[in-house]
Length: 252
Image (tube, rainbow, N blue to C red; front, side, top):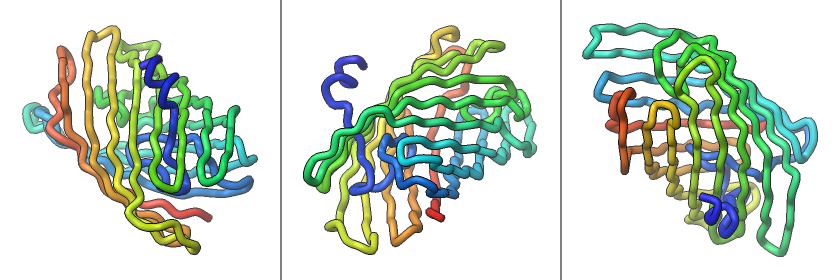
C-alpha cells in the first residue's frame, strides 16, 4: 500500500468527474454547495440491505470541505426472517487540502480526511450503513488528474471503540473520459475502482471491484456502478454477492 501511495498517488478530478465509490482530493470553489445521494443495494448471503443517503457538502474555502450524511436504511434478512427500516448511522465529514501542484492540463493534490460517525442507526451489524455505534475514520486521499485519465488513492483507519470492526481501508480507482473536455460540461466517464478492507480485530479481509459509468451535464451528474468481491476471507460477516450503486448530484 505504501509503495502505491508513494509511487502513483494520483486522482481523477474535474477532467474525469468525481469518483463513484471512492473519494477525490480535487475541490470546487469557495462557497460551493453540493447535494447528492448514492443509493447502495447490497445483496449478501444473509439478505438484501438498501441505503439511501442524503449528503450535503459545503466548501468554506477552496481547500476545505464539511458535510453531513444521513442514510435511510431498509433491510430484509431472509435467513433470520427479519426486515424493517431505520435511519442509519449519521456521519460528519471534514476534508482539508494541504498540498496542490498544478501544471498545464494536469494537477496533483493531497487531502486529509476525517469521517465521524455518530452511530444513530440500529445495531444491525451492517458495515457502512447501520452498526449503531460511534466510529472515527482518519485518512488521506491523494490523486492526479489530467485531460486523458485520472487515478485516485485513499488510505485510512476506521476506529470502532465499542466494537470489533476496526478497519484498515485502502481504495484505488481509475477514471477514463469518453468525450473531449467541453464547456458547458457535457461528458461521459468510465470508472474502475478497487476497495480493500482489513478488519484487524475480527481477522477478516475483503477485496472488492466496482465497474461504473457516469454522465455529467452542466451542474448535474448521474452515475451507476456494480461492485462484486474478488477476495473474501470472512469469519463473522455474511458473504457479499454484489452491490448496485445508483447516484445523482447537483452543484448549487
